[in-house]
Length: 468
Image 1 (cartoon, helix red, strand yellow):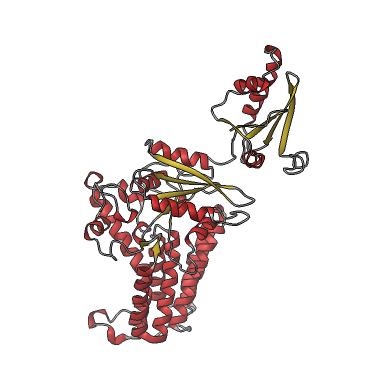
Image 2 (spheres, helix red, strand yellow; image 1 turned 60 degrees about the vertical axis):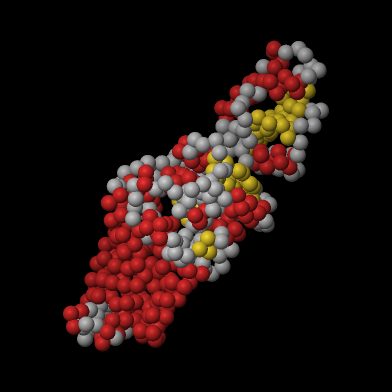
């Protein structure tokens, strides 16, 4: 333990040695990952053995009976015991005994569950996942009190030994999907998962340069529970509050919990507005640019669209690119700006970059308008990853429109649809139920039905029970 773990060198790798009925007993633990009160109570119980026991022939049995804890086991492999210790458990060695006692005394530092910033709702629960995998499984178990809910732990990383939990409901989830995920996790060869969930995703999905998100992230326990009931598999990574949902389609990324916190009619309205915002974020800017350079495509009633003769001192195409990139820079600045300074940064963006840039002839008013509309549509996209992918698609369509006018716009827009149709998430078509077409499932995506009216599960999850 001294040579391999660094006990006596690393200040947080601590141990106590006590004599119980004439035999040495050593208790090892990591200070900071353990509950100090439990460690103290454990030591008290062991020391009290000397005052109340005289039998010295069966010290192991006496010690085992005095360790009053709900999670206790004995193992033989010292490497496994060291991994348990570095995970926050306490391990006990008894001189002359070839088993190692393991007691779960973990108390990870972290924050309390709170509503995630990116998935806020007007009404609904305010709890959210944290960086503690034990708390996260408890938040899910609180909503699914089904004995068939399984939470399987796998350790990934030769050095980090990161805990990864696979959650699914046994008689609903597809066993083949579960085996594929387990196989991919066990095949990971790396020192550690420094970026937690995102690093794990890149190992199991092998996405390459495809910008569209293959898996969905959520920090809401209610959202994760709904997907478990539908037959999805949830992957939790210790130290990350984001749960990975598999398999997913494009339409999973455009749904939000707020739709299910309103009446079906209101939820449908909110959903359609969100769909409109997402489509707008992709196509309105290149479409407006196309109409601006091809005035002949405009009917007489819409001739006001497009800049007037005064287009500024910068070419229109370059204005669009600069404004679009500028909005992205402002978003990045907002993330990294301390909260007390965010208001000042907003004023700078609105006054200096907006009004003064127009007056100076750097941008035209319509460019700022349509770039802002596209940005609002991006922010209305529930999935942050999908909004970034759509922004890349928008820039590509603008570039093609600049280079080839109408044929470029039509070709890249078609290519965008074909690219989505070619993507698969764990053998699941990305555009299902649109491609392949499933009217019943598509109807439930377009219209937010009441919960009692939705009695089926999506067929893409290959569930064993009634499906769409």
